[in-house]
Image 1 (tube, rainbow, N blue to C red):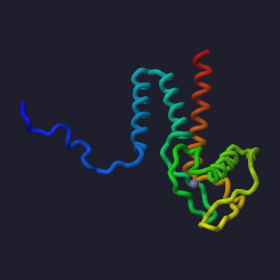
Image 2: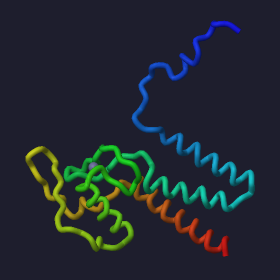
Image 3: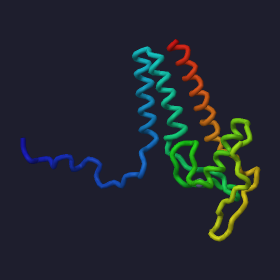
Image 4: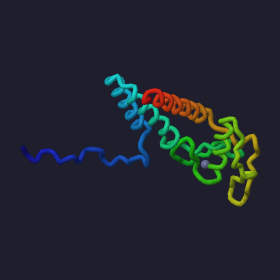
Length: 160
Ligand SMILES: [Zn+2]
């Protein structure tokens, strides 16, 4: 016993922390749930994990807004969850895109959407630009929807 080591001073250091947790942390959590389900041979834990993953993709994943602006570039504001955009204007575009993904015209659509491209100018977003999702988002939203359905059906059958 001595005073050789300064207590816990080296941990973390002075490295700057990112503002948000890494997606790896979430994946580690889901891997742990999958591991427990496998180890316990518990399909209930597996279903719960699946449901948690779907919720995560919908509402919690640290991602970017990625609404396409009139110039075709994707918005790079940070958001949380693939269903959500950075602000009210982009959220409306995103809602339209989600309705379109479901094959339904947005029943709450409120006329043309204005998007402020540059300060001072207001550009009306054309109908073929609005309602587009980045392929990665589209794929994961479809996957998460399928996962939610699977989990719900599994629960209905499992807890009967
Ligand atoms: Zn945005």
